[in-house]
Image 1 (tube, protein in one colour):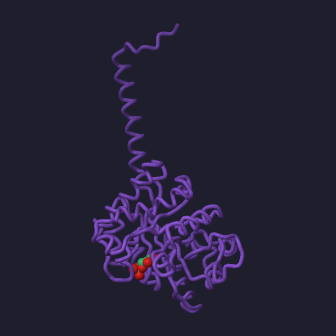
Image 2 (tube, rainbow, N blue to C red; image 1 turned 45 degrees about the horizontal axis):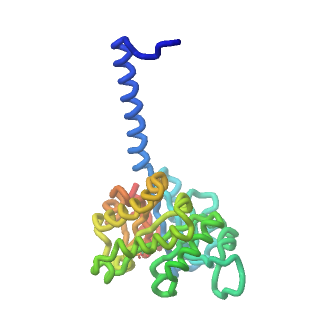
Image 3 (spheres, rainbow, N blue to C red; image 1 turned 90 degrees about the horizontal axis):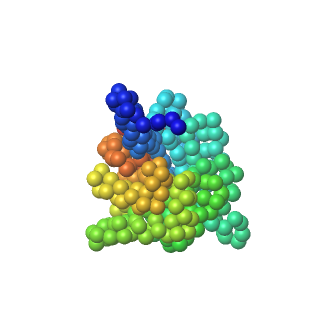
Length: 285
Ligand code: 13P
């Protein structure tokens, strides 16, 4: 029998140092992972655009995207411009997606678009549950959950939008509302589906109002969302991108994106002109 016990004090010291070094490597890896999420900057064009606008905006972004930058960009045009966007961006690092999808594969759903149709135009992402869809077009938490699941099943990356109204915030219901919106999707698709999804926290009162959540307010809700995801799967919680949306611009982006749990932005108004969108990208880089 070989005696594996260490007797030599030098060997004992060496083994302790090695163990300590190993422990430090593991710790630093976890620590690094935490901050390894690249900034994702998404432009939701909403119902804005024309062929001329698409060409000038994307040509502006394309010139800038040739410079090395630590920020990933994605644009969400209205459906009719997807073919043009695909043609312009197909050889670039900029991704694109759609603003909504219907959960059905096909059928008599006038005005709707399926996941397969979005894939025909090489969409990588799709927004689901934007507050304008919820408020103006009556999408319930259950509708949103079905749309998320359809996107997930098709291999699209759903960007799940959540957020409270001003009245809900003033009533202290922010976390209850955000949790309810997340729970509907978690119950429908399971935590595993969040391994390939993005969450966007967009307080309704900050959208298009020029009133941004303070970095502290946003970070508080982002941490709540990440903790909720992490409580079901720590690895997914560490890796999932949580974007902030609501009046993001070149002046406030740096402070917001510097927060630990804010991994980029979902931008409306300031995504419609290349110079405004790039000012956010440069502030974030
Ligand atoms: P604004 O940046 O115009 O406030 O819009 C935010 C938004 O709704 C992005 O989806």
